[in-house]
Each structure stands twice: as C-alpha cells, then as structure tokens.
Length: 273
Image (cartoon, rainbow, N blue to C red; front, side):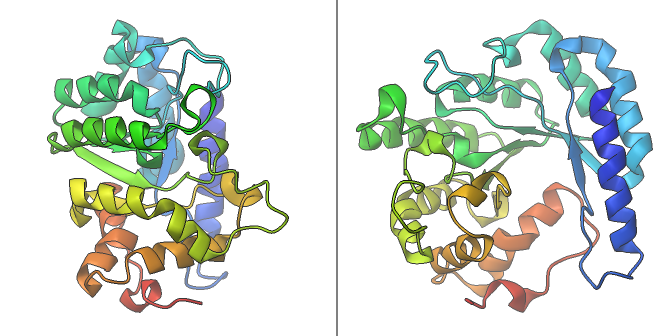
C-alpha cells in the first residue's frame, strides 16, 4: 500500500492548485500511480485505494518493468520478463477492468513483451514512455544506426495496435548515450534538436500526431539541461507542423489519453522563449 501514500500526497497538491489561490495552472489534474504487478489479483485493493485517494484525478498505473541483461544498462534490480509473468497479466486485467491506463517504460529490447501486452489487452490504453527506450550505452555504444533501425522496426509493429500511445522524452537520461553531462556547459535547445531530430520525427511518422505526446521527464533530466531549453527544443522540432498538429502533440493527445477536463491554450505551444 506504500504507493497509495504517494497518490494521497500528490492529490493534496492538486487540491491546493484547484482552489484557484495559486493561479490558473492546475497541477496534477491527472495522476498516474504505481503498484507491483507481481501481486497478481491481490493488486485489486491497491488499485481501489489509489482511486479512493485521488477520486477522478486518478488515471492510470505505471509499474516498474524496465530491465536489461547487461548490468551497465540495467537501471533497477528487478526480475526480467515481468510483463510475461502470469501474475502480471492478472494485475493488468484488473487495471483494464477499472478503465485505467497502463504506462510502461521499457527498453527497445523489451518491446516484443510490450507488444504482447497490447495485443492481449486491446481495450487497455498503453502509453509507451521515453520513445520506447533506445539505448546508446554499454553493448550499444557506437551502434546508433543499428539500434535506430531495430528500434524503429519494433515501434512500427507496436503502432499496429490502436490502443498504443507513445510519449516522447527521456532522452536526457544516460541510457540514450548522448552524454549531455560531459561538456563544460549544458546543451542549447538547438543542440538537443540536432541530437534528437531523427527519433522525434520517426515517432511522429510512425504514430501520427493523434497518438503522440511530449513529456518533460523532469526532474530526472534536470541534470542535463533546463526545462525551458527542453520545451524550446520540442517547439523547434515541430515548427513545420500545422497549429492543429502541434496542439495535439503538446496537449491534445495527453488530454485525451489521460481524460483531462482542461486543455492548454493553443498559443502556449507556439512561442519560443
């Protein structure tokens, strides 16, 4: 039940924001919590407690499933193949029945497991985080083109499942291998554009703007670049898209996926600071 305490805390912040005493922004209008999928059917009281704690703000679950055989890449000390475990499938079924979404951060080497989940639960909205986890460190260092090709192929298979949405961000983490932390100065938004262009445009080409949303991945990426620099890079990467497409990328898909009742003003995504 420990994750429920996190939901309670965040919902308190959301309630403060909704009071209107802190400006127009509505913080945490949608909350995605977590749980242990290996609880199987025993996950039900945890899910129900999350939903009681946050009411209609509670939108979904993001469990820990990311794994790699190489210890230089593996971020968590968790079992491999959690998504294929029968207990996890029972838990995912409980998530689906409650109308919640499932956020998954998995490396590109795990996307076949994610694909199996998406096919097995066609009525479940699955949000693939961090562009589907391309890797540029450990055994993949110096193999960017090879990884890109395999990553793209696996994403195209995922895109055939209509219940999949992809979230673009997280490339500041060390796993992508861009090493933004090594130069004496942090990268500019133009430097991020040059590094990420092929990934972002490939994802848009595969999933389209209706199943694509930007994410900040803050505060995790804060050690690499600033929040403003990140979002200016996203704006520059999409400057040739229509206002309607950009509105979908920056707010529309997120609002639809997480069933949010408010939207971001249209002109909020078109200005570059």
